Image (cartoon, rainbow, N blue to C red; front, top):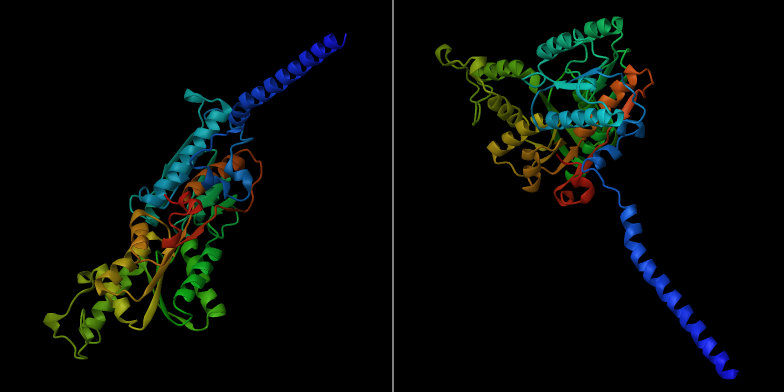
Length: 400
């Protein structure tokens, strides 16, 4: 009897061990299956959407547009890295909307991007706006090159029930459904604070502004000055060069050369030029103007540029002077700027999120068309980048 009990006990133990081993074996098989289920494919551009606030503007949920709806987006330029990145965001939002709604062929929601051939050409942008409004889109997004130039067209759009969304650069026009942009004031104040730190809180700064008319440029310039005046009393603001005022400065440079108060590449004699030797404004190049601005501020220790175009002008001017002791910060992150940052010619950049701007502009336009309501301001985010931070994972996802 004892023998039979022992045999039964042994068999029971063996069975329990087998079950336990099987359970452990099953666990091992299931682990990778569970892990596989938890894996979510992250879109390569997702990081540029995640920083958009409010979060409702980083996805297409609930945007039930009618088949064949048309949304027009107008930028300040048709080309250039920044605007090409905006267009990528616009196109991606259109693809996401159509995929979400299951639209194909003629039913697809159509979203187009257009802009002036020459960057910041106000007249050309207004002409494009006229043409697009004549196509009666369900909504229109625009980066306003001149804060006052489009108000007549905006009134006409309102009469035709075409909602307008501003992006990148807005205006004070009361009828805008939303403004999708970088927080330009906060970004410029950060740039000012960073530059003041680099300059050890003392010295003069020259400003290079991409224009004198767009709200984005005006906000950046004013916020930069305000930060320096309020929180960095050891920093003074020197000359401000607006790229759209080239003709005025060409005239000024010519006058000073003729009067003997300025000489290109040398010291002024103070003597007027003979009439036959006088120069004309149209003989003065933009390089001449920039060299003049730098020469008139020989004690400058820093420069601030409000976008990539302004940055290139400042960078080329400093290169011609072979000046390595003037700190340089500004906006954007195209290839030339990133290379200059890597080479130590630029000290820091405010990197915006043009892809996110393009994407969120389409979302805001769709919401306006559907009368879903919009936030007055949609913040697409920015980050401060230095040479040391270029390889940072969070920074890399913002570059373009």
